[in-house]
Image 1 (cartoon, rainbow, N blue to C red):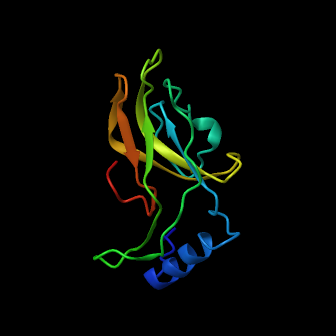
Image 2: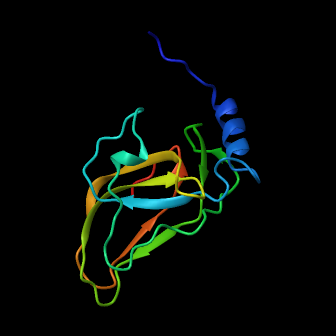
Length: 140
């Protein structure tokens, strides 16, 4: 079966609706995952093993920017950068394979992205910054 192709103008309209006040992505949170899972259209929250390094917590609510276009014409929306930091006296470390976005309650998976290379968090006060973006085109 041939794929359905959505024009960039319609993607922009959909992204604008998704991040509007009281829309599905309003209040969304970024989570890190530590299992080497291959993303796919049938993925669920149960597929992810959430990070648990000392100091970890899911992000605060994402503040979305205004949707627009990349130089190649692809519609995109980005949120504010979310920072995750290992505590000053850690007892647990993780290798982080990517991030996923949930609704404000953490019960609905919205989308996910795998990093180009896993990020090893193995020392006190290490920082990992994530810029939530859809489409998730950015490296880490």
